[in-house]
Image (tube, rainbow, N blue to C red; front, side, top):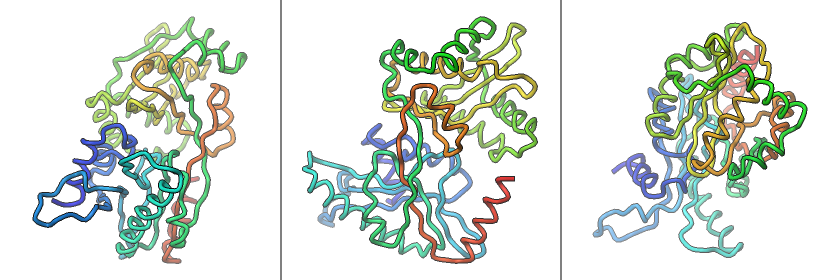
Amino acid sequence: MNNKEKYKLLCETEGAKIPLFQQYWWMDTVCEGKEWDVVLVEKKYDNNKEWSVDQIRGALPYLVGHRLGMRYILQPQLTQFNGPYYRYKNPFSENQRLSYEKKIGEALVKQLEQLHLAYFEQNMSPSITNWLPFYWHGFHQTTRYTYRIDSLGDLDIVFAQMDYDKRQKKIRKAQKHLQTVDSITPKQFAQFHAEYWRSRNKRDLLSELFIERVVTKALDRKQGLLLGLADEMGVLQAARFVVFDERCAYSLLSALHPRKHDNGASALLFWELFQQLHGKTQAFDFEGSMDEGIEYSYRLYGAHQVPYLNISKCNNALFRLLLWVKQYRESK
């Protein structure tokens, strides 16, 4: 049994304890046609006994790429974070928790080093605040931010915490001329998304086939929600796709009609999503951005700032140059 097969069993056993973006099904979907794997830390056991998923103590799934003979690890598309997953078996004191994370974290890092990577970069789940095992092995850390509404349990409170002029009033106004559409197909959404980016004279970094595949998989698993808004003529004005588990929903993709103004459609669409996610998950993550304008927009919904860690290490100067060139071109 290889590591991916073991990891699949771990995900099936742990369920929502493993965050959505680290789940086997998610990695298998966003990495289709590419190479992904996972490093595992397992407790030693008697070779005469049959292997058990209970032996796994920690895991770190990753997407590996190849360029000019160099191997590297980067975040898969649409994936907010990977990073380590620690399997805590019993209640820990603070000292015991940190000791456990040091032991398991260092074991994961040592396995990553055996891959002889030119470059490594991953975001960690917001629940991971201890990156010392990586620091002690020469990795670097940058703090990034997302924005979350912690509870969708009381929607009256959620609505009241939104900015009155820029969100509440816009939502009420948009409700007068826009109606919810829940019959959008993954293919239609992928096309709508592509048209939106073309209208802005920018290249969509995601292919239509990729978007269609991810949306279809999430919907089939009942862990996705695809919702739109149409005007009085039935013309689609806005659409958004989110994924969720029982702990949190994540806003991943959105698009507006290429030739129409927003007119509160984005705000209303979020509000409609909150209502449909009520009772299905606890929190809502806006998939926050370090962009100043986007950051401000999400704060208006009453969401609070949540830090997460970006961990990287470059072992090859040529790769660093190639990465810089790629990022520069994508920004144009």
